[in-house]
Image (tube, rainbow, N blue to C red):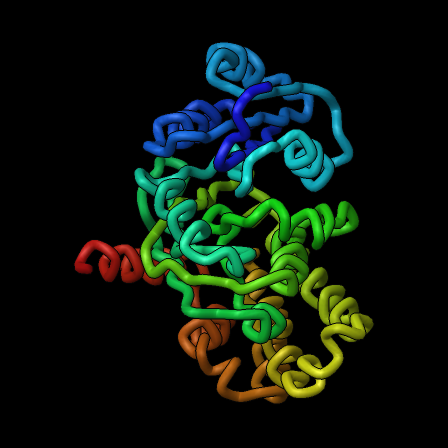
Length: 314
């Protein structure tokens, strides 16, 4: 019987031929013995399947068939995974060199760790870094307050995932955050203060194309948390921060989706619920307000130039 792999990486894909090969190479070129890679393609018709076939000899398993959406595809891949640790990488994102070895080492150091996560670079369609998403030593309370961890920077113990259950297919945008909330109840979380992956933001990505819909799922998650007996005590003690976090998240994505008016109203609701939570994004709140008064495209270009300058000077 084949030796059990140490870590399984699932790559869901659908019509991302422009980025797929780079994503695959970022996994396959990791210096991490005992790795298996599984690709779940949703029936692409843009040349993705031909790319997958070129790498088929280095894959543990792959399939190309119509599915019910991203969560179904990922669940399908995770069901095939045999590794002690698991993660998934979307086919337009990237792992940075050494990411898997770093994550595996952290998970092996402490068997109580259900989930480890690191920082994530934001890159554009050309692969240029536009932001560095830095997190912190967060736990379940922070997740409940909508401290969001970039999905490609997360790695899980498979036993914890099996206890938590698969991705909920009824979520289309915050399916990962909903899963982290469940996995974090199965053990400890551990933060690695270094970038492990890059998330690509481009016009076709749902984090851009459908930004305004993310916030509505944040409110769904609030309702779900309220209904969980195991979270009752934490919810009661974090209620104002949780609602502030949901409103802030809604505002953030509305702003990214080009809706500064609704974004500002959501920021004001966050401010009313818990001022420190809202004021952590005071610069974005100011940007939303200013966008209502001046040329939005010009202001956005200026904002992005400043952010790139800060990154290049680090």
